[in-house]
Image 1: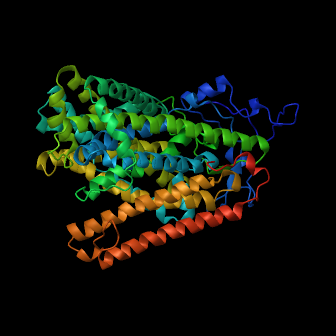
Image 2: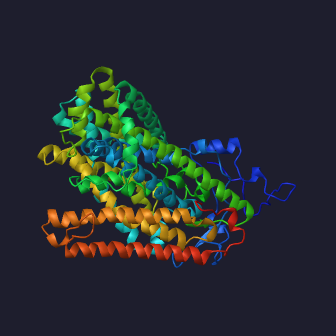
Image 3: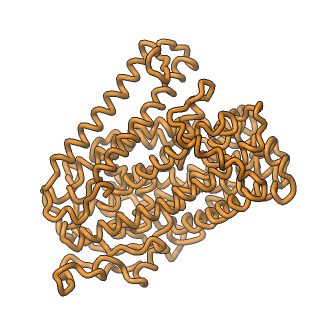
Length: 585
């Protein structure tokens, strides 16, 4: 635990020319190094001054107010790497080594445009999801609760539908069995069960739950990225790189035979996807980003040395020149951390995996029904020797890291929803709730794997497709809600700039379009309701399909109107807001 050196009563130190000193904005090297684990600055919440109800502070409506603190000094980017590494780990075994390599192997590089557009879109989504936490110390779920109590519970249920199928543990077990021969490949469920147990046990390695997962994911991230870079040269798939530029600019290309569920899953998993993305703000708060450093971290109640830390209500900072410059510095460094870790990491690993799949999958062979089998049965046997060993290692690490991050994300998100919306006012201990939810979710995953082992109902890959499609549909409403929240409830100096507003409008429309296609496909093809058929060109859809397209249009127009109106209304309402504002602020 570290105590903040900033208090409400401290005086601002200035340069001789009247400007704020650099030392008052950026943390010292010693202060910054504390963030390499996570930072908690303890405060007596009840004694803090309450933020007045005026345009300089977040709107509290009837959902509780905000207490005033100083924005902490901003550390260097290398001090705060962590939240995005966990997000990268969650992405590795989904879109990056499964969905997108399978899509490219089947459809060719013409769809590469959708991958990199999806990754950049998720960069804006994820950083907007953490904006609320950095500025208020609350999770995005508490922010959604301020819009409507319905939304946190909706995302909890949707998150269970997406992540309640332990497809990554199951698929990782299949890969590990084929790799090592410890058990026959048909008995992959043994490894899958062991994976879930190992994940639960790993949380007992330290007193702060977040620190455990961060260190594990950072280690796996370095292995995966290093292995991918080595592989592209060892297997001689560099020749495929020449085909990427044409595919990267083939905007709008969508082959008729591509499965919409798989494609939407690929879009959602051009990154972590769905419920996992919503963890970005919670993880950044646990790390200590912005005023989130005043919020307690989830501790392990089984550790005798784990004294509990309190998760308080909302926080805000007074828009002084010092605080505004610190906010701008925090915003800059947090974006750098996410871009350098998440975006660059995804582009490297996924592109390498795609080049290998494009080279080694025969042109006449379809693999979109099972990308795990693509690696095990088609690609790896052609590599042989050390290359096959390294490929198995990268694929297994990708799947294991994803299941690890998914257990963490589901537990942390769900516990935060329960605690923020219900638990705090009823005196719940958030650490005990976390451990209980972690245990229940792990046991649930083991039960699903065990039931499938007995009944042989489906293969591990089906679990992934179900979860991926649900992730894509879920991202449609929360993209809209996030930009509405960040513009209508935040003051001018912490609102997103117009460039980010445009990016979130794009994200809402992008995922809305493909969600309508998937919903129409399920209703017409799977349930026999042909009136709800939807077409990519929109024209030619069924009567019910047109209703779905109209719904998407209403959502888009409403999102754009609410956020644009709020931006315009907030203009010039906070003196000195230009210190923290900008087109991409």
